[in-house]
Each structure stands twice: as C-alpha cells, then as structure tokens.
Amino acid sequence: MNKVYLDNASTTAVHPLVIEEMTKVMSHDYGNPSSTHSYGRNAKSILELSRKSIAKQFNVSAQEIIFTSCGTEANNWILRSAVVDLKVKRIITSKIEHHAVLETVLALQKEYSIQVDFVAVKPNGEIDLTNLVELLAQDVKTLVSLMHVNNEIGTVLDLERVGVICREHNVLFHSDTVQSIGKKTIDLQVVSADFIVASAHKFHGPKGVGFAFIRKNSGLQPLFHGGEQEKGLRPGTEALHQIAGMAKALTISYDNLEQDEKHISNLRTYLLKQLDQELEGYQINGSKEGFYTMLNVQLPFTNDKTAMILFHLDMQGIAVSRGSACQSGSIRPSHVLEQMLSVEDLKKPSLRISFSQFNTKNDVDLLIAALKKI
Ligand code: PLP
Image 1 (cartoon, rainbow, N blue to C red):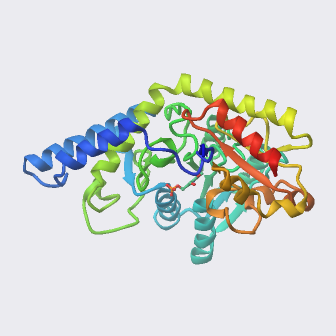
Image 2: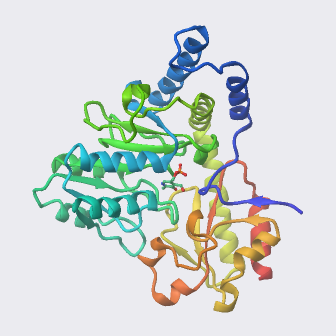
Image 3: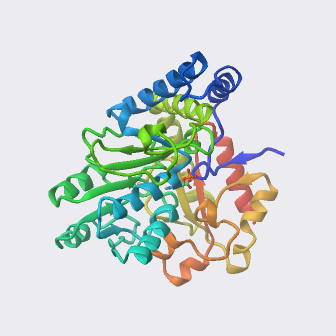
C-alpha cells in the first residue's frame, strides 16, 4: 500500500542529514557541555555553534536564544514568568491559540487573578487588529500573546504590524511561531516581538527540543531551578544531539526555503484545483490565501460519514488530521473551528491537510481518490 503523509503541521519526518548530524553527536560528542575537560569543551562548542547558527537566522544575538524541551515548555515559561516576574496584570490573546498558550493563560488567570481579554477573530480566522487596538486603550501592564500562523487553519498574523501596535502601546508581545519557524523568514530587528518560540519537530528536526527567543534585558526568570545551564534561565543538562539536530534542520530549512515554498505552494494550489473539480460543495475553513503549508477543508459529506472519515483514510494509508493533532480521535469540535463556523458547519467533517517538501502531486491524487470513495 502506498502511504501518504499529509499531516506535517502535527509533525514532520526527520531530515536524513539531521539524523546523520545527531548520530555523529551521539556517537562521538557525548561530553557534558558543563564539564571543563576536552569532552565537555567539545560539547560546549557544538552547543554554542548551534545557538549561533539559530540566532543568525533571526538576526539576533546568540544569548537571546534559550533551548527548551519543546514549544509547549517555551510558551509556558514565557507566559508564567511574564505574570510572576514581570508583573503583567493582563494578557490579551485569542480563542484560536494553540492549547499550549490558551490553557496556560487560563491557568494563570485562575492562579493570579490576572485580567484576560480575547481579541475578536474575523469569520475567515484572521485576528481583528482594530479590536486589538481598542483593547489596548486600557492602561494596565499587559502582554499580548498572538500566534503567527494558526496550526489548524493556517491564517497568518502580520507580526510586524502587531509588533508596532504593541510598541506604540508600551506592552509586551509574545508570539507562538511554532508553525512558521523554518517556513518563513523572521527578522527580529524588524519585528519587535519580545518573545517567540519554536519546536524542531515541525521543521524536520527531532521531537523533544525547541527554543525561545527572549529579547535582551527582558527580565524573564527561569521556570525550573537547579543548574546554571542556559545562563540559569533553563537549568538541566542540555540535550546536545537534539539541539545540534535542530540547528541543522533550521539551516537546511532556510537554505532551501525559496524552492521548498514554491514546491509546497504548488501542491496546495493543485489540491485546491482538484477539490474544485472532484468534490463539489467543499469549503475552505480560514482563507484560500492562508499559509502555504496547509489547508483546512470542510467536506460536503453527510453526518453519517463524518465519524469514520479519518479511519477510512487511515485504512488507505493516508494520514491527515481533524482540527489539531491533540484533538484527532476526540469527538469535541476543534476550539478553532468553533470560533468561526456555524453549528451546522461544525457538524460537517473538516480535515487539515498539511504539506512538506517531501510530498508530491501523487499524494494529492491519492487523497482525492480516497475521499471520492467515501
Ligand atoms: N504551538 C503550536 C502553534 C503548535 O502547532 C504546536 C504543536 O502542535 C505547539 C505549540 C506545541 O509544540 P511542541 O509539540 O513542541 O510542544
């Protein structure tokens, strides 16, 4: 059976060159970066070269990149420390954030009684920036947390514009950039975000490693205690093979960005064309002009076919996602689609189809053929 992986917003295949790099580090460079002997110094050098190469991609200094275990940890750390240490009293976010942000914000609201406001989301899933400006009229110590690319529907936030709005209102700006890092250039001298986060497994790196960009002099304090690693901001022996793999994956992603973006965009356009021809009555959740890596498609199927659709596709070797990965398999509608769709449309099956450079037109053809059989 031909297997088709179209769930790259959940996770991606590890790039063969990344595996090679990680294998080398695990086999030969096993010193602890905190040790002072030659093994340790060698490990430290790999660690710092990785940090430098990541920092360069975003036009920031190496000390502003802090390694974490994943995007979820980075989001939790930033939001919590903003409240606990930076004395933020109010968080403005949206109801279509990833749960790593949304649930953290709600937990902080419960624990610290901070004010939480949700910026309006337009019917096409874009953030209403006029409403953001209105919300910022209050004079309270505030952090704005808005994701760059939505992981379910692919809507894109204008990071530069939101950065300017936040500066003008003298508030902190955090963006969950997990879906865009490695897939879009971000110049942090142009975008005035205070904090952004990344997760390596979304750009063909290993799982279990990510990083946070923490702008210099932000005052953020560590979430964990017990070591001096990462300048005391993230104690714990560094997962050197993961970090080196992540740095390699990011370099490969940005070195090939232009051609990969073109290839993936063409696949997305091809999918839209095939849907037009073969699945009359489908709708796009979000916008056809959304991020080039994904499409969220509402299928014109009757309710009785909805429950089994992922199962049917899976039986034919096709991996896609309903809503976001953490929700597939659950019967609750996606919290993102809930903000945008009518009750009727929510009952219809929606699929998130997400691409990588390893996909081909044949993958799209197999998906369409499988959908037609349902
Ligand atoms: N934020 C977004 C937008 C995501 O898509 C994900 C992964 O699904 C995360 C955060 C969590 O990242 P990680 O898997 O590294 O914890």
